[in-house]
Length: 90
Image 1 (cartoon, helix red, strand yellow):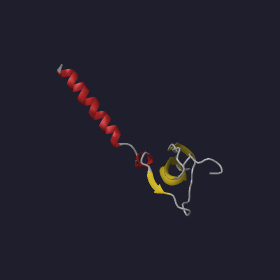
Image 2 (cartoon, helix red, strand yellow):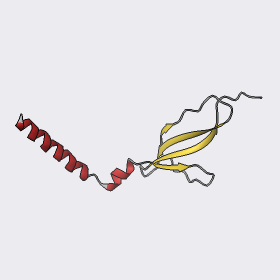
Image 3 (tube, rainbow, N blue to C red):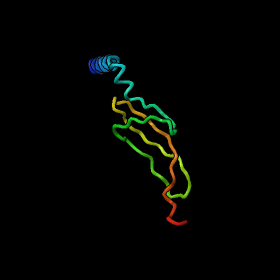
Image 4 (cartoon, rainbow, N blue to C red):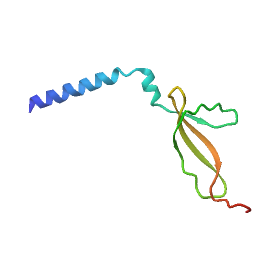
C-alpha cells in the first residue's frame, strides 16, 4: 500500500513538473480575448470555433462568436444581430 502511495505521488509530481514546462505562447493560446464589435474592429478570422444561437424574436439581440486568428490566438467577439423571428413585410 505504501509503495502505491509513493508511486502515485511521484507520478503526480512528474505531471506537475511537465505542466510548469509549457511555453508561455502555448498557454496564452488557450486564453481567449473578449472583444465588443464596433465598425472599427479589425477582424482577423482564420477559423470560427463557435457561434451563439440566434433566438426567434423580431428585435436586436446580443450574440457571441469564438474564433481563432491567423496566429492561432482565440478571440470571443460580442456583437448585436437582428433576431430570426421577423417575417418579410411585417
